[in-house]
Image 1 (cartoon, rainbow, N blue to C red):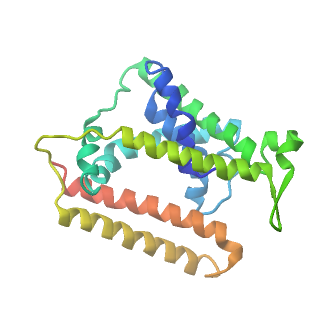
Image 2: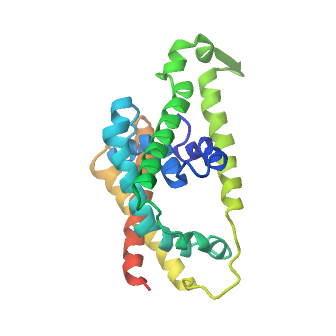
Amino acid sequence: MPFTFAHPAIVIPCKKKFPKYLNLSALVIGSMTPDFEYFLRFMPKGTIGHTLLGSIWFDIPLVIILYLLWEHIIKRPFILSMPQPIDKNLYHITHRKSKNSTIKKRIIFIYSALIGIYSHILWDSFTHNTGFFVMKLRLLSNKIHIFNYKIPVYKFLQHGSTIIGSIYIMIYLYSLMQYTDCNIKQFSKETKINYWILVIVITFSIFLYRITMTLNFVSLKYFGIYIVSFISSILVSILIVSFVFKIKYRN
């Protein structure tokens, strides 16, 4: 599968094309949500996140939860803890309020989330060995010889689309930069350092607990689990630290 955080690249252009009929937050979060089953399990194993039935009873509720966590806990402390000038350039995002108070807006949110979810499943179906199109189209399983290695086409699509998607995401994030030339409630340098020190400490505490207490410590056979567990640890630590800073610097 392509890297989880590259998936929004396929849905962001949809919002630009149909700005009135789509919710960007739901599109972006939805496009990543199927993989969050892995992060919740702390291992690259899933049974429901990438299924049609799971998209309704697992992915949609998870999109809503992730959206609320981002909007009400993570967003402001996370952005204000960024180094200058990123914090100032993205400050405008911290003041964007949720606009899902009407039935119409909520319906738009739900179907935008579904579009994001299904875009993820569709993308994976071309880039995973058990993907629908990989199993149906023999071409995708053909192997390309590079030096002494035989690499299937779907692997090239997987890593190639990850690189392209990641580049697009970085360009898009850069386009969001809007310098705020006014007095804003910034975090001090010391506060920012404290934020990231806490994130690092908690991340490694969770990660080390995972590999020492629940696995046989270091083994190459657990490499995939290490990667997913490390990402999970980062996400949990950002949530915890952001919650603490949200309470401490609520004004």
